[in-house]
Image (tube, rainbow, N blue to C red; front, side, top):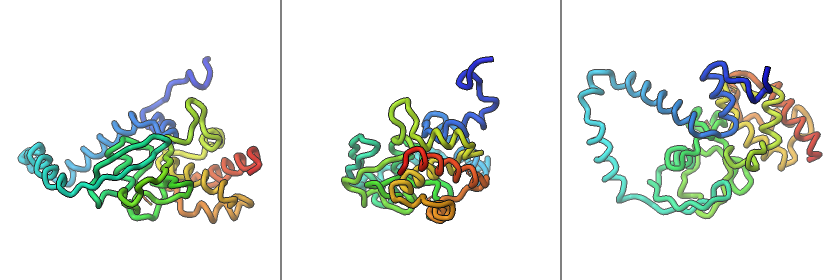
Length: 223
Ligand code: FES
Ligand code: FES
């Protein structure tokens, strides 16, 4: 029997769960594409969908939007980006749709679940509630920027060690939030961690394991 790293994922769902906490974009894009296609087919219906020229619709909307674009400079995970964005585009959508940084997740899109949490100048925010154009010059860290090369961030390693996730959808937001929590010195007791992580919802109920992971990093790092 090989090492853990040699063991293949037993299913695609398991693979997605494992990779999503690392912010790995390729598999997530495939997943989102599948979900988006399914949703559109359900919403529009097969007959209407086949009658509409999607190319035509996309061309019309692109032409209308181009005249309203605003330039914004962002530093994301240490790299500089200059984007022309619609001023109504959220930071979350800019990250996911324009830069393919799909580690940050869209859960509720209403500031209620924390799945979209990223760090802006070291502070955690819900990126679904923040317009990209308001972040001119800001330094943004997403789940993709937490690891150092091949070396996982201590929180990523601790979440794996303590089974801090099941489906993994909330996990990038949980880890970004926990990274800020530790820097804020808000991890001094179980209750304090629960309180300051309360903006990050886990529908799988992995809370005890998330708590254990954060506590371990706090203890090991002595922060
Ligand atoms: S997607 Fe932003 S808080 Fe839920
Ligand atoms: S691990 Fe599934 S929502 Fe948190």
